[in-house]
Structures are given as C-alpha cells and as structure tokens.
Image 1: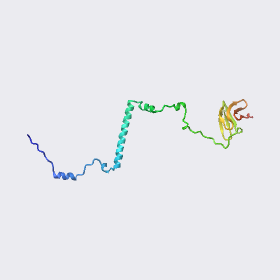
Image 2: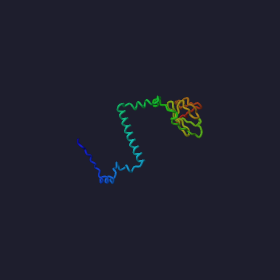
Image 3: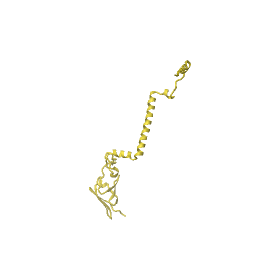
Image 4: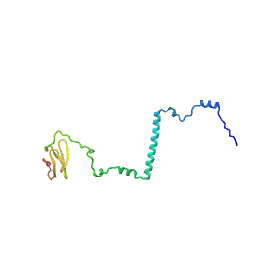
Length: 170
C-alpha cells in the first residue's frame, strides 16, 4: 500500500497578502446603485424580456395561422348591421344640424322666386336664399305643394300662400 501524503500549502505570507488585496468587483455599477436603481433596472430587463416573448409568440402564431387574429377579433364583435351599408347613425353620435336664428319669422310677402328648375326652386328673402322642392317646409309658407314653371311665370303653391313671379318686362 502506498501512503498518500497531503500537502498543506498554508503560508502566513500568502494569507496576509490576500487580506490586503481589494475584493473582486463584478461590475463597476454594482456598488454605486441604490435600491431604486436596482428596481428600475430589473423592471426594465423584465419588460424587455416580456416584450420579446410576446413578439415571439405573436410572430409564431401569425406564421402558423395567418387568420388567427382576424378570426379572434370577429368572434368578439357583437352582431350588428353594417353602418356603412345601411348609412344609419346612432342618434347620440349624430352631428347636430346648425340652427338658423332670425330676428322675426318671414311671411309670404318676404319671399321672391329667383329661379325654377324641374321640381325645385330657389326662393329669396332679404337675408336668406333657400332651395326648396315639393314637400319642403318653409317658414311663413308652410309645406310646398307644387312647383310649376309655366311659359309666362313660375308658380309655387304652398300650404299658406301661392307665390307668382312677375313676368319679365322688356
């Protein structure tokens, strides 16, 4: 049998040299960082890892099933009529119409016929110009019943009055 001797490398000079040697630093910033720096740094690293993970997941899903996200969005939509096809709007979202403010309501005497074309006419007051057609409601005249343009002068028959244009004089 052989005896194995153990060597003790203990040296007093080596121990003293190690005690005066500066400690090994892992990084320069490790000693200078406060607790807030560590929290913000760790949070930033976790956010970066989570973002990379989400991007990887969404990329893999879109490669394997290109319609996945579109089908998921359509599955969560409530069934409603397509507003573009029907042209309907919610009353809450409808744009308000401007309101006309007048000093006084016009009367039938205030209107003049400017022009008649087909079943529409242009009527003028001192302050306004209106385009009307059969069925329009005009302040002071009421509902327009008929618009005719005869050879001599146009005639507009309304609920409250009949307007005639004076023939042109040469």
